[in-house]
Length: 496
Image 1 (cartoon, rainbow, N blue to C red):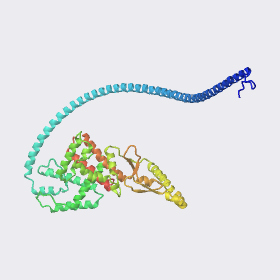
Image 2 (spheres, rainbow, N blue to C red):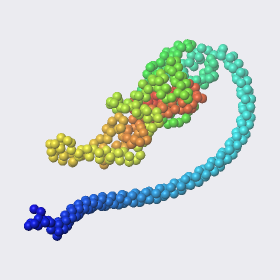
Image 3 (cartoon, rainbow, N blue to C red):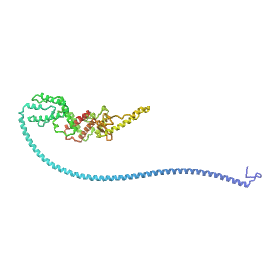
Image 4 (cartoon, helix red, strand yellow):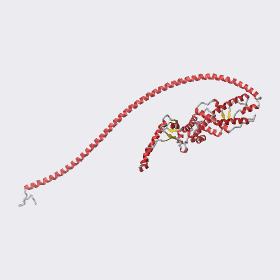
């Protein structure tokens, strides 16, 4: 149906044509407006999303700014602390520089003072040298005069030697006991006067050695009996040594050992009369050769202590004296003696007497650990829920034992009276600066001190302290230290 024409005449109606045209245009405008509206809504949604993204970005930026502000404040605080430390370090550096300058001035003053004292000492030494030279010249003249008198006396003695009978020689020789020898520098054949003087000296020495062995009456009686039998059985006019009893010889050796160890423990100077009491000695050439090699290597500055342990003499000392002395307790194979030996070699093994109250404090710490261990239930008690075991462990007695750290010797832990523990565990030791002190008894302390003394002797030998002494003197000193280790192993070092 065409609405623009007339129904009767089918002519176009102008008003309707205009209206249809307006309608089409308006419809077109409406569609265009809708399309623009949709586009505007899409742009609005896009702008809204962009706005949300910008708001989120603003929030993130603000949070980042807050974090940056906190970092800035922290950096400012660090800068302030660094500035304070810088000022302190600067003040310390100034103090150190002032101390350095003061020390430098003091060193200069000391140097001048030392040079002054050195010049004074040199002048005093020169004056003393002049005095000593004068006294030496005088003594040399006296010595020459004494030599002339000695030659005259020897000539007289040569004339008298022919007149002395064999009976006097036999009597003089029978009065000398065989285990001891008196070193007589003037014994050239035995005049009556020298024999009488030797008898007096030997009798005084025998009385001295007898007084040292009064604690052992059996050895004294045996020595007297052997001396009597030897003096009676010796034929007159013979030069063979008299027969002697082995018990008397053992007693003599024991007396000399007691004498040496007493002198060693007291650190007294060697008395002059000790040189007149000597034992029969038999030199082991092989042992002395090994000891000579050991001394040569020890005195060398290029040889280390590890190389000394590879020498035959040091191996012998390690196997026979040092290692057995460091094996403690009933199970010596379980003792870690190697760590103790290394600590002694590097001088980090310390042994000292316990200060007052140390053993009591150590026992208190061990007692608390023991009570805590008893109060803690075992895993089986937790599973079974045994209340009896828990109650018994919580009410357990704190009585127990405190052990020696080396040999494991048990000492009764008496909380009321700790004098027994302090008496038994009278020493403490450690093998490092960073270790705690451990209590030990005096016998283990003697063993450790004996080994420490032997290695101190080795260090002195390496430093050349004994370079002016003879080989036999150094070997006797080494043997005395080895004897000390042996006696400490037997627990008789304090007795000797």
